[in-house]
Length: 335
Image (cartoon, rainbow, N blue to C red; front, side, top):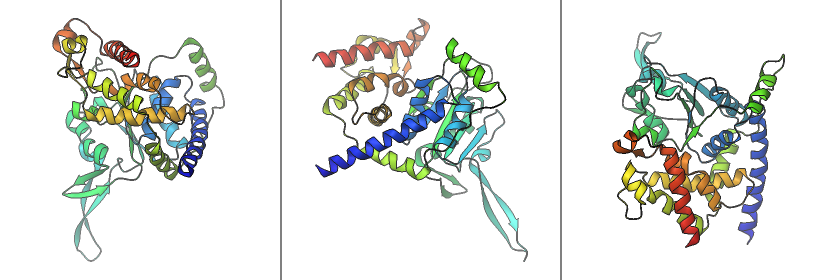
């Protein structure tokens, strides 16, 4: 009983701190509440986020603000077609000492930070995009046979322009799967855009202030994993993820007909963590079925693909996810 009471107090205290952090972020990144929530969910889960949207929607501003508010040492890489893997990871240089002896010294690249902003990641070549794979998954990089651990915590928030634009390269499926969430950044509403104009074109602009520290964020990530998840929510996560695998016997007809490949166990793991983080942000002590439904598209959208026939018919993957998720979850609740 004491452990449960202690956990409750810790979760409530963390919820208050998160509310303060969210308020600080939204004073500079106006509107787009869902986007802010999802980015904070990714950080609380210890994962990475992929922000997708047109240029000029504030993605860079959001990441820079988060770096300050969360107390993380940030770095930014502008991805371009001529960017090389060594520009991200670092390289070894041969140095000559005063006594004439020579030795190699490793010069760290910008990936050695706590919050890396990979700006317009899909403008770089696939080779350079893949240079982030080991860092994102293993929190370490290997250069010249030597492994170099990255700082703790380590998060990548990448921005991506729509693939229909010129000069973009689709991200490899293996790299997409490393992102905990795919976050769509849409145009602001008229009222939000009005507030943006008033806040950003005057003589003074709101400055972010630190709310978290790196150590406090790591503690929050550990606390998140201690939060209970009810059997009902657990079963919903399993049912939802497996429903989008076209070769699974439980997959509904629209999935069997339209999906080329579906999400793997990493999607279930991501959803299990993300529902806890969403509950925390909303001041609840445990996740509920609504959290599963709300996170279906951000967790699953980049971990599956439509087959050729569905693409030829102009079907929409987000629309399919929303429709099937609503149907599957409703059937489970009824059962």
